[in-house]
Length: 364
Image 1: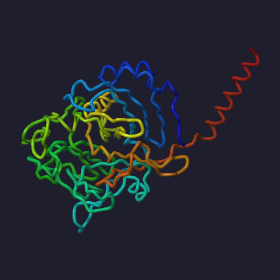
Image 2: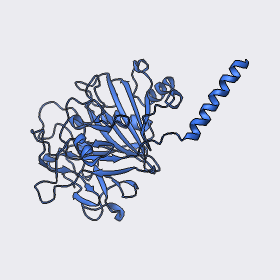
Image 3: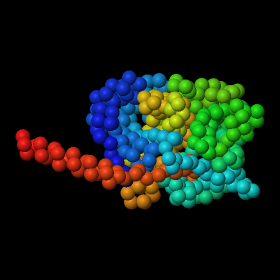
């Protein structure tokens, strides 16, 4: 059953304004929006939705489209210790061409009979928004099968080096829901420390590392991890816009962990339905304010999709604002159990409490 939390359990508007202002996120119109809405759609899953009014970015290269803007966000907190929580990454292609076959996030969630899903990897995007074989960027594994490796430097232009970093770390979730963010091991198909891959996804870069913002460094030639090309480097032409990918205000997807790695954060911000999106820097600032300790920026833009089965109606749908569903390279499916209904004795006690209140009111 979908349960809304008390206003007291949400962040009070004034306190929220002060906190977001301190991170440079909140614009002057921020207080005009309602407080965040917090719900618990499934056992161990907390969903926060919010609308933020953001000032023009101050730590970005100036350019067109970088003024004040609105960001509608979804943030899922998933307790990895909760009963019934499980995960699966989109499967590989087997003997077919490429590494995987594109599919909508909603289609993958329905196929797996999961309760939630979000888009994951960057991939070789084609003009055909349909099911096609594709190649992923970065490390990928599903149920213990590794089917895409880390991408060493220097990245080829075909791998979008203006957006992606070499050997971008991967989020790995074991069969027992132990979650870590890891780099490559002895080979590009293994993890550091000998950790065994199970369900693993990677994005463009790790933008929060141990509680600190860690945006990619803009360089003229990528020679190692944590670097991306400036727009002035081929295949680009025209005026420079510095860190083009991270500077643009766009839809974003991110996956992160708490300091104790027992909470998985799934984040989306829209660029549709009255929302403009965020820069990568704003994304990191916001999620730092929400308690994220390590964070990966995943594929965004038109790929950003968050889906859920409504626990009341059992209807599956897209719950973030998208202009159209895109067939993406991979998605991460989340399995979760219903929130237990209150037991009979709890309801009886609640009823007795109400009767007691009425009796005292009559005596008064």
